Image (tube, rainbow, N blue to C red; front, side, top):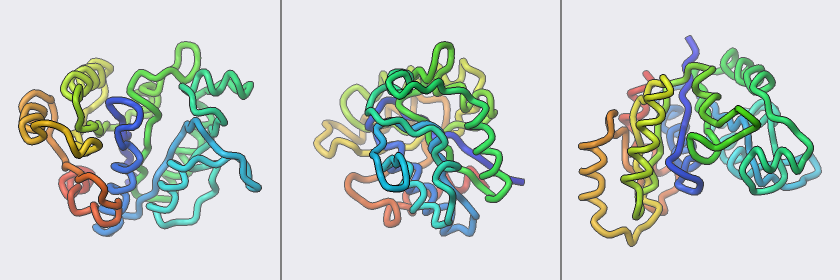
Length: 225
């Protein structure tokens, strides 16, 4: 049976893609047929092949399989803005149906699909539609990526509370050392372990490439077995 997981983040720029790529390398090393998906991506560049997003391309490379780009990233938007704004500027209305169709194709072809969200949990995609609705409507368990920096406790606790309140299963969380100069990192990690309502599935060091960091996410890989 195909499995899937939704990678959420406490904010923009806290390493969702880094964590998702690292998890893909870990899954593949453990023998999983795994691929990534970035349903919605803002900040895409014009290329001879069409709009392309760096995060989506990183997921494609980490999965190690040939996929049509549009399956991996069905909604590619030009401007690096909140998706609802970028979509409006492109004259696009984001709906879940084409995203779900692309996801279904990936599920049919691969044992595990790692779905990376966009921005934080409640980033708007369209009027009445939020990034959270992808996980909610597809009934995906959620792994929350916590960017370890000043303010992470509040962001992590609020995000976790909302994920659970929205009826999603919070499978666990991954700490990501985005700020190597963060004060009291171990104490902050201990506080997150104490207060978050799900287990820590790994802590990623700063500046280590996903293929080399995969060993730090053994618990995340095991949670998807």
